[in-house]
Amino acid sequence: MAAIFNEMHDKAEQVRSPYLRIDEWLGTLKKKDVERATREAEARFRRQGITFAVYGNNEASERLIPFDIVPRVFAASEWRRLTAGIEQRVRALNAFIHDIYHRQEILRAGRVPQDIIINNAAFVPEMVGVDPARGIYAHVIGIDIVRISENEFYVLEDNCRTPSGVSYMLEDRETMMHLFPELFLRQRVAPVENYPAMLRSTLESVAPPACKGEPTIVVLTPGIHNSAFFEHAFLADEMGAELCEGSDLFVQDGFLYMRTTQAPQRVDVVYRRIDDAFLDPLTFKPDSGIGVPGIFDVYRAGRVTIVNAPGSGIADDKGVYTYIPEVIEFYTGEKPLLKNVKTWRCSETKSLQYVLEHLSELVVKEVHGSGGYGMLVGPTSSKREIEAFRAKLKARPDNYIAQPTLALSAVPTFTASGIAPRHVDLRPFVLSGDRVRITPGGLTRVALKKGSLVVNSSQGGGTKDTWVLED
Image (tube, rainbow, N blue to C red; front, side, top):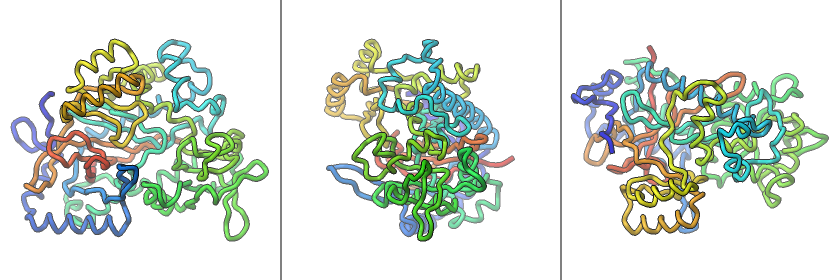
């Protein structure tokens, strides 16, 4: 593995310019200050009910997500380069989804194999020919990005279905401003707290043509037992939208309505946080108890907008991911500004052979996996774990892709033995409607275990506040 890029210190151990003020601040902190701040941050998160679900032994448990008080910092120039690549990618992804459900020109051109789309579980045949408002399918996208050097960033994956984590980004910032307000007086940090307003503007901009006046927006949640329920409630409250479960909505005379204590209210935009299969029992999974019967017919008729559109997941499938550079070139005529990680498709015989021979060096992921589950990190796995995974891979090669173990950049993090570098990734949140809106920063996830490259909270990771310095 290549040398690890330290975002705070250069090769000569000099502090890089974005971190100069952070370095000064760290020099003033005593151990008791850190312990106090960590306790206070934990108490704030506990009061807010910010938890995540950890699944194992056939049951889930709720835990607080660990928060590290050392912010991650980007210079304004670094962020401008990143956002140009992010915007290019998001526009191409939406063009791709539209094409897949219409003329399928990219398949006709042979740039993406037809079977990887048509036989994909994320492909929704019912969406063929459907024209959503403004032609936008993925309105809320989380792009997972890693850094390996001063100027090298790679996209690990695209999240085009129902990306989560924005509440952590917002609460991390609010917590830092509460604990260390003096830090924000010393330099100009781009704000993230306007995300809910940006989200509302985006949702309003994609209201259906039938909407007259200010659109009625609802957030559709599976309910209180969902691991991201806090985020659903938080965003509904911040946007001034109603938080609804499926039973709160109904279809009548070709429109969608919300039950209220007075007369039913017509709904124009549904920001849904439930999966495609459970959205409408009349169209998809018939035993779904959390969806809205008939909502898909109303959507198909153009009388309600569903965010993100059903079928958007075809663009974030890990098998399709390997073709995204082709997708970007096909729809934009430009070379990708952000690189993909080199990826082996285990469905291909030669690739499978290579992966099986190099399992101890690679990261192997399920095509439809998420949250750090169902994956193998070769360099940190035991021989027994590798052999067990080898059997899975041979049994279902089409279910896996493999990538090299990247030397993820590291940032200063408080540990039991003091400040030490820990590996991080980044999930910027992108909104696509009348225009593309990108929140400056996003969610930084940190692998708190020494040497670990797995940043998922379910696998022992935590979060940090992410700063973009303004010019």
